Length: 508
Image (cartoon, rainbow, N blue to C red; front, side, top):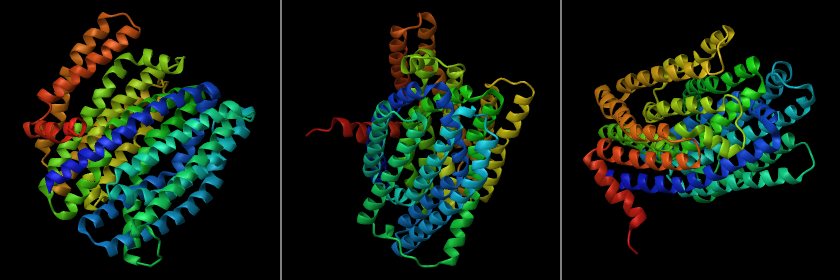
């Protein structure tokens, strides 16, 4: 059973990586073109106004995690009647939340955009158009989640990959439309992106209804299940809100203290991180359902093994692609954008470092969610994460630079990683010693030894294309060799040879 699950994880990971390379390439290209079309100021305006909607759309993430957990859990228990109830109840809650979200966004949110954000008077109309389109795009994202969750719970990653590829191709088409239309580029961009989101919702819904019986909504009131999902989502809401404060709340602080140009640099930095984070997100997406299913089956030992292995591999995958970008970020960003906005290089480096720390924590989060007992986890981790906003505000008020908010974020990320280890120990008995030894210490050693030669090459050559290519090649070779020799157990090496590599080199 474990061998079959490992093979499924490997197959799904490969499918998701095919998706990732295409999406990453198209996304980086479209970001560059959109920046050039909109300009630095409008690009920053798009990021900060969209950030307000993201803050209001925090309900989306909270319910998404809940739906994913309950669907996967019932699949693991093979309770199909309960599975149908979970989907229908979840979809009902999503529709209710979409209605509440719309009311909140069109009242308090609209006031905040017009009365509190720093927006040039001549761009206020365009900002309001972007805000309205962002609201309805967020509603689309909210309503697609139950169908998306069904596909991932069934581990049909190929379908998830194909629809994601279609989405990114449509967004590429949007960029070419922007070049041709005579209307306001910023407002038009928001409208086209909303159209893409609406089409994707319809595709997910159609596919799910045709292939999975449980995704056909049938209203049946189950008060206990409703309260259970809402309670679970409530604690997720607190956790999601704290994470959003760390992201978009800080984005608004930067706007209030430094203006939209700094928001543009932060937006570019997160665009780079989002692209490279797919290296661990796709692997994690393939692993996540198995962690929950192991818990549902009562196979706690296999769950522990998968938590340790996936935390370690998530770090390796992100490190593998991040190292040359950390070293050569000025050249890469200038090559990509044909310009180098203020702060963007150091922002990018700090965001990547923060992301590498968080990558080790993702499987711990899934383990906590698998138990359904998330009150302790979300209240403690969420509270510490929320400290990003008051601490950052205090530092900026005292004259701190834009970089200071990222230092705060990194420090708190380390603290929350430690907290997660202790909480998962309490919930599922995961060994703290094993996590520290097999994940934190081993990953630190791999990063140290992997970076030695690339650093030497970086400082011994002049900046330019030759150094970029050399550092990239040396980083890749150095990381792979060190990971294989130092960072993997014998059974993991054997698994890599027999399962993963055969997918690429099998005969016939």
